[in-house]
Amino acid sequence: MKCIRKTFAWAVIFIIVAGIFSPDKGWAITIQQEEELSREFLKVIFKRFELIDDPIIVNHVSNIGNKIIATLPPQPFKYKFYIIKQHDYNAFASPAGHIFLYSGLLMALENEEELAGIIAHEIAHVVSRHISQNIERSKKIGMATLAGIAAGILLGAGGAGEAASAVTAGSMAAGQSIALKYSREDESQADQLGLDCMTRAGYQGKGLIAVLKKLRSKQWFGENEIPSYLMTHPTSKERMAFIDTWLEQNEFAAPSTNPYEFDRSHAWLIAMHGDTDAAVKKFQEDVREDPSDPLGHYGYGLVLARSGNRKDAIGQLKKALVHRAFDPYFLKDLGRVYFLEGRYTEALNVLKGTINIAKNDPECLFYLGRTQMELGQLGKAATIFEDLVSLKPNYEQTYYYLGQTYGKLGQLGDAHFHLGIYYDKKGKVKNALFHLNRALEKTTDPGKKATIETMLGKIQKKIKSAQNDRKTKGRPRQVRQVRSK
Image (cartoon, rainbow, N blue to C red):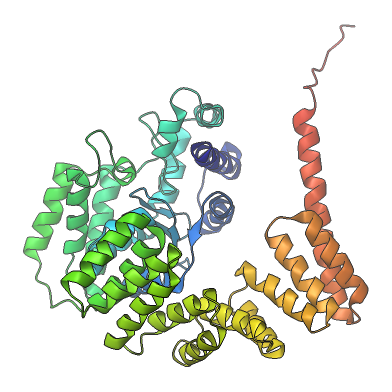
């Protein structure tokens, strides 16, 4: 089922490309068209893939990306970075500057230099506009071929699953019959620009070659497996030789990276999203070899909490804090585990202290609000949740607990309103309609009434559109008969 969902997602992308860049439009790829494509593309990604949205990893990746972008002239796109929760070793750039990295690849990296190498290379593809150029070149393939590939993927015929696994957002296609994947010339240009950006951003440039050599050696894979990254980013011997030569001919200043930032986010990713048994074994070994290593204790505490052993997890997180007392991530996770263990007073004290260090951490705010709810501090909880809604509008669970809090406060209009937003974001239409209609009945504020009515209208429109789609799919094809005179 998971594979089917993936192939369907990529098929939708093919159809989007065909729709926006049709022959009638001359296959011209403007900045505006690329942004339009990116919006449709993101809808597919967000619907079909689970993203990791925790600040400890997203902020770290974004900071590296922004450091590299700062070396470039003004860009037409606002770059954004995402982590897809997939164990594959892949990364890609989508239209209009959206950079995606798979969690599996991130876990396999060893340092920030390697991460910067991957990010710089993907940014270089966007800067060089390889994505838009490749889409433009796809007119040589022809619409019929594109449509046939899309149909094959949808129907699962002719090895479509294997082809779909080779698709990346940057290349928009897979297999030898498709000319949309990056060419060797594209890769060479991205290497040159990426290496230049890396060194100007304070990196030594060795990270890219290190990752590519690992991928080529398949040291992370079985004998018959090829990393997805290599299937869309050709890695020839000539390309590797060029990078080696470039590194030899260029002198580098001492790296300006802080290894702790990478190591902390790396430990968190393995503990929270890696294989549980392997993570437990890794961090047990880390703390055994170096009992003073705060990240060993931190990772061990996280994975213990993830597996349900919260008592021992608290002990490990406290040991981490002995060696790094004011690390906001250590504090936040200790407060979170206290909450999950039902130790609300201790959770409150830790989370309030953490907020003073990391004011805008969404998970910290979320658990602080929930702790205040449990302790009966409903007014304070409502304020925290409202702040979180403003800071992070897509943090869905906030709307649910804000609605619950307002319900306990007797503010039923606000309660139903936020529950309606929550269920609308979750795609539960009936629940959303129920709560929004109740909010409309309970609300006296004219401005909020207008907002609710607009939301109800949009939901009804989506329902009608879905009904029409179902009718169209179920309708037999009409064959027009021409009578002879």
